[in-house]
Amino acid sequence: MSTSSAPVSSTQRGAARLAAALALAAVAAAGAWFTLAPASPVPDTTFTSIQGEKFTTESLRGKVVLVNFWATSCETCVKEMPMMIDTYKKYAPQGYEMVAVAMSYDPPNYVLNYAQTRGLPFRIALDPQGEIARRFDDVKLTPTSFLIDKQGRIVKRYLGEPDVAEFHAEIEKALKG
Image (cartoon, rainbow, N blue to C red):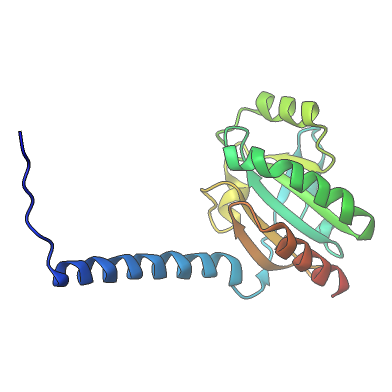
């Protein structure tokens, strides 16, 4: 059985190329918004750690903080976690703090097990009602991270796993500021 297809005209190829270019531009623009948005104040938020400790964004002022929204079921989150551990260990002595906020759909016992078996050295917070995610621009996708400077301003938003060299350069810049 033979299948015949109509030849593709140069107009159709041109239209397809234009559509692909526009789609690529839209993705690039969205990515730029996620990572290049101007500094904005961190929302007033109270976190509850997996150990039951309560702390606020205000109590973290004076430190450079990464608030990382993640889930144990998120492959990219799990993949980036060793880098997050190494980053924390490298910069914590200089005033860097990290809060890994488990998404509301992540069962607390999974989060606790993951944190214990991987020896996560930073604070792990639960967000059972999704309130913290809503306060941080209604986070829905993981991993999403917010880098906050010493003055309590969000200076960088990351959607997905960050480039390590660029990520570390941003932390170093914030630590100096």
